[in-house]
Length: 105
Image (cartoon, rainbow, N blue to C red; front, side, top):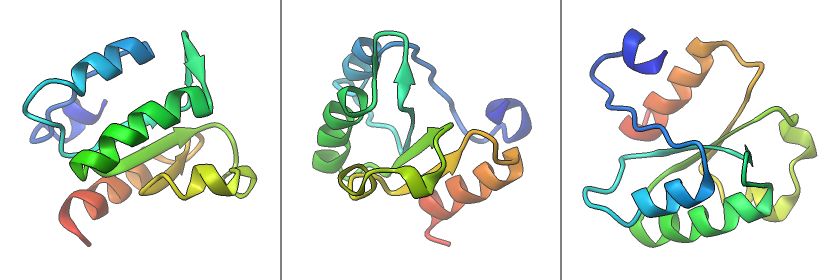
């Protein structure tokens, strides 16, 4: 829905952790990463840690999208992400967060 609503953004979708890691090996690097912590092949820190390592090294903002309330997010996890959006959030809220991350607002 992001690309339909805001066509200036190019969205690349992957469903599995191994696909995400393969994509992050390619150039150009994405301007931001939107990461769901629950994937079919991994969840939680098993998803976050390898993606964070690449994002940190390449200075890519990492936005986590999760069904877990942010208040329940473990501190070590919270320190690895740029921003957090709950899945229940309005799409407009998500887009505001994305624009803030990409454009420094």
